[in-house]
Amino acid sequence: MTENIPRSVQTKRNVPLWVQVMTWIGLVGLLVVLALGLRLSQQGSVQTGDQISDFTLTLYDGYAYEGRTQVYLSELRGKVVLVNFWASWCKTCEKEAAELEQAWQYYQPDGQVVFLGVSYVDTPREAYAYLKKFNITYPNGPDLGTRLSQQFRIGGVPETYFIDRGGVLGYIQVGPFSKVDQIKAIIDSLLTS
Image (cartoon, rainbow, N blue to C red):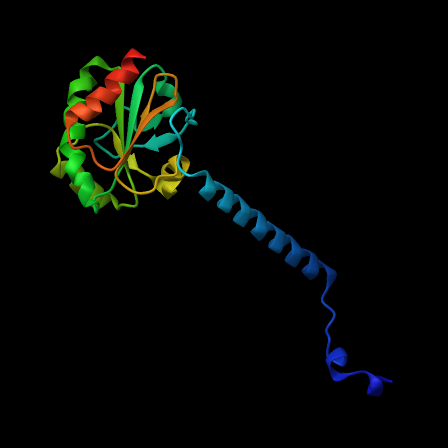
């Protein structure tokens, strides 16, 4: 009876139903992940006026904030928060390192402004060397798993985000600062608003 059935049909194997179901579930899951990634990429970076979701930054040894090795944005409500994404391999980051530290030294005694440095795609050894090279003293930590850079949807480094006392993004600086007065003007406007 199999003599009249074409060879391609004769060699067809029956795939168990559970394999078919798992294959379809996998394909649908892949499509969902791709769709979410495409949607996120089309959103662009966060915008001025956006409420910034809470995040945690684990700090490097020697760069703690008020004795704590982790900082939660929600705990900083009522303060202006500067979040600076940098990397030891970034030459333009070096151009603003002194200005950021100088601004931190100016605002730090009052306690109304907090600087958070976020090392992007760096190794601890190189990050520590960068921090020491530029005598940076404000709290700094690694972007573990690039979670923060994804949350802010950064396009590169350096990028700096200024968050007002209520947790709303007040200003974005893409690229390095050239003068400490630029940083102070932005912070002062957020302190008085």
